[in-house]
Image (cartoon, rainbow, N blue to C red):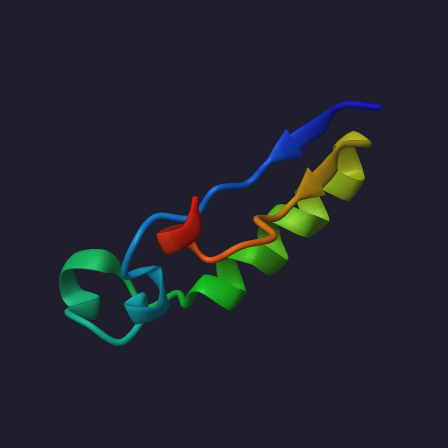
Length: 56
């Protein structure tokens, strides 16, 4: 089974809040949920970051 490391960039916590006309209305949790569903369908394991981006 493939493993995909997920690295989130800065300010993603603002998705769906800051300028939704430009960035869209989906929040990070919505995107992560879609990623998990698709990964399961493909038989892929997602590996989320275990430390805040400031520490990576």
